[in-house]
Length: 290
Ligand code: ADP
Ligand code: MG
Image (cartoon, rainbow, N blue to C red; front, side, top):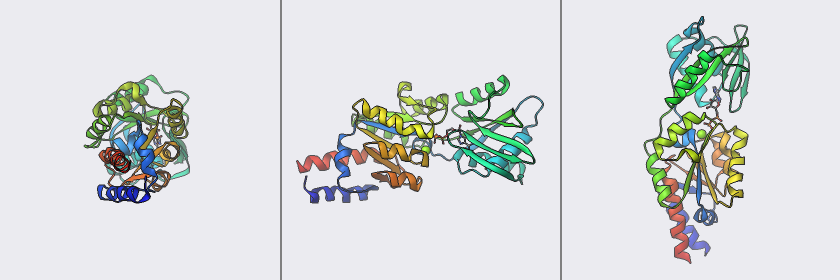
């Protein structure tokens, strides 16, 4: 491949809304056979809204939302933003939180009005069946639901909804037409992940869910160890290691700087269909050169 021909491919990429880190990237793009897609913010909009608040027997719903909102106010996570915004709208001014801790891939803890409050999954030793049932029902409806507790007891849950991007199903179909196998990867619950997968046309056996942020790169490594050439598409800080580990990392231009820096390609408008365009372009560009 001559450098000039590769650069022509790069210029065409810019027109399509693809930023390419260097001309050599086209070569790995061409060989890709598997595409790992992050769920939140990549396949879905990532703009979540609060849709349900549940309080266990003997607890007030407003109290669940008020304390959850106060804790989540200190976090940047999409789930947190939705809970804090929903609480602000429905309750008004929220109490302040102290000693805030973020537990990546799980949730948050802080002290509010002298109570030790936690919001998230896998943060509690025990979730009463009443609350666990409400969580399951919300997850079956495709929502992300997390228990809320204080002073060592789970008292309720909050659920948020995210929408699949309008272009995602079409993008998955285009990737398949190129002979690629799409895999959905997420830290979110399996029921939620499968509901999104169904909507975009990914089989349940190609869903890898409940993966901790630091394990995302391991999943990519595992696929590479099976002999696959892997592209990873992501947007979050959590995706950066997996993007760097993949044969080809593609960042959503709408995503975080960490994801963009770790990637070979950036899809400027955050449109997943452009991932298929990028692969088609690199195959065509390199075919012309040969
Ligand atoms: P994803 O892979 O979808 O980007 P993360 O790894 O960031 O998700 O988080 C995985 C899960 O952990 C979320 O779906 C949510 O259930 C829980 N979680 C993470 N952070 C928070 C938070 N601040 N508040 C509540 N739940 C959270
Ligand atoms: Mg994401």
